[in-house]
Image 1: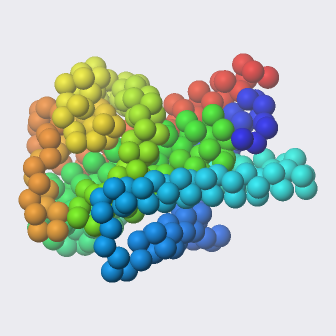
Image 2 (image 1 turned 90 degrees about the horizontal axis):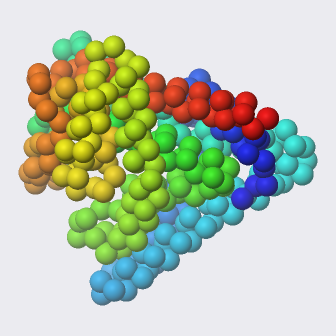
Length: 326
């Protein structure tokens, strides 16, 4: 994508991880994902004009166009911006690359979102915890008890260890910032139109499938990384995390999300999944892990620990790789 050497890409990725650890999701400048989301809605309005009745095959074809155009435009714009920056000065190109890669990952953002659920739970304020849980899950939070509210935060952090860290870093290492942003645009598409409801079952099919394909390898790498992270954290079990992936991951409806969720459940010794309510409809999600004890709010903190240690392992691996290729 950008013609950086492996040594340069490794250093840029390491810098991006540090930026995310410190800054997280900035309020200014406007996050690129917001612009991607606006572009998706604009394209959707053009591809599916209001009131137009379309057959399933037509909706799928237009969904393919939505996916192809969004990801291609995201990649090309970022490539052009970084190339222009590099033409002005090499270090400006490096800085732009590190910054944009940092916007595709969200370790600090995930931690902050989880803590917004944990702190009210710790203070006995279930209503406020439900409110913040509603910001990170699509399920009906008004009917959740303390355990289910904590579970929603744990599942979000575990699942998004792939989407918000391992996958974008994987693609950044392969193709620098433009490929990382292509991944983020595909993931944004999935979060906006990749639903199996009446409105998006056909139109969002391509976006959901493309996101599954892009996450396939990173999700499996994430399972190994979470197992290694569990080995580094006192009280967690790497062996149980690995066994849990083998035993439960395939039960999840997603080909990828079951891996990090099973790993986290196994490492901590709790059970994830179970009864959720979506738009008034009860859904029984596959149960992952062995319930060696009841799930507790403090397990949110343990999942955040797994996320941070996983990011630290990747960071150290990137630095060691940089030292070896110098």
